[in-house]
Length: 422
Image 1 (spheres, rainbow, N blue to C red):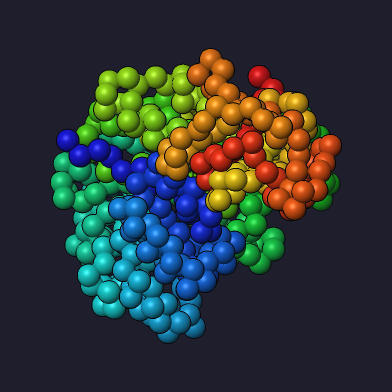
Image 2: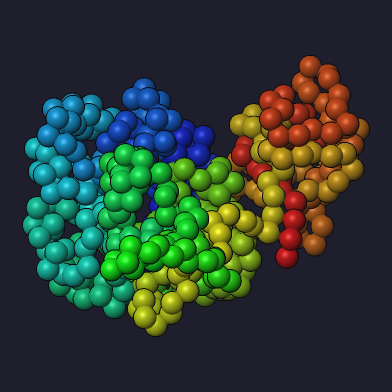
């Protein structure tokens, strides 16, 4: 039996390495303005992107390139050059949204598979068949589609791979087809520069057209974040999804999210998938871990429930992302030092979140600190806060860019975290 693929976001080279270290089978990333994530696209140059593909392949894993924007006529010549240049790097697939770009990729790089972006809104086997006939080997299903509908698509097109989002930010608009950002700030959401206007608070008014009277609608207990969607979390349904036998890839949203988010969500879904295949699936375990990440509240979205069956997809109170834990520090790639992400204090125990790749942890006790396992959880405490140059601190706050020496070597990209609520 072939295991389902776990696909994680790679907003920059470091996050790509973290996703792979924490258990991703594949990552998706983009370079330049042809990706729908301009902010993450700018993290890669062509040179570093080629290096990232080589690094991913060296681990026996895959990298899919996002070219899922909707180009203007004036951009097509530049897009052709972009596809040609990236194709020479031998990525494992192009993620494309527009039919015209599909034809362009087939012309320029016929040897590279094409995955259809969720932006294409595939909801039925009729639409899926059209794209399949164009040469698409995988569809990333619209977030509004149900598992039952996907089963029908697979029955009609058994050779077509199906990928679904299982975690991450949700858009209040239909498959991201939103113009609010364009209207308010000129930032076009479907060309990669969405300003997330749906997360803002709004004051509502009602106007009597006959008299011209304008009434302000006062804020109620529900608040005025009327368009703010909760985050998707299908971890408790991984078993149902895999039982269907028709899903080829589980995708995590988040190229602009934090490094901790990338690592923690990847590790949690990796565990859920692996547990499923050994009949040890435990939904409560995955839910508890994912609650540690910053989120706007979680929803199961529309895959297992129709919109009218479970109307809990909106967070009307606020758009602030909160989690049960705070990331304190991140271990550098050398494994010998860490960088502060919040506040590091002496003689305080911090939990270690360890990647799946990168070596073992050794119990340690010395003048720098202690590393020990307590009830199955690895903990670390600093007895001294020192830089490699020997400078000492009583306490370190975020913004301090000095690398702090660890009591002993830890796997690269290990996180130190502390519980803050719950």
